[in-house]
Length: 116
Length: 112
Image (cartoon, rainbow over all chains, first blue to last red):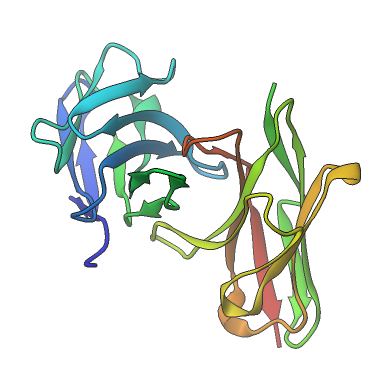
């Protein structure tokens, strides 16, 4: 168990630019989640995948945001035309969906985005 | 609406003193409740979870929490605080599945 890995750890970008983040979940985990955390707040759910299928998207996920998990392993989260309000910590988590219940979420260390 | 409320955004205790972090939930379905800890610039680590098996739940690092349906509470406690407990703590809720709703967090400060 090498844990959930996120890359990059920090990203500074100018308003209007596109950014992409990557998440590598725990290898045997079939569910992958994206959360966003702003300063002084708890994480807010954005979207989740079971294998390669995106099963749910939050209303927080505007059309400038897109997430993929093409082969059911790693995932990417892209933000197009970034705005200052997108500045936040983006957290990825994974879990194992199994009969009888899910394993708890394991979180990565996050990608901190600063939009200037 | 289903939600969790954490009372007190900042809590300060002396080393060796009791830690009590408060969490209340609102839910129309049987809740699954969690406590997570977050150290600076890191992700969240699960401390403990309530899934209806037992109302008193023991977690890692000496923490425990008691589910009280009559009070809709799931407060986190630790008998004796240690300096290494200083961090931010989040209560989280789900009605099933793993899409968690988090509280706003409580920053715990431990003083000598």
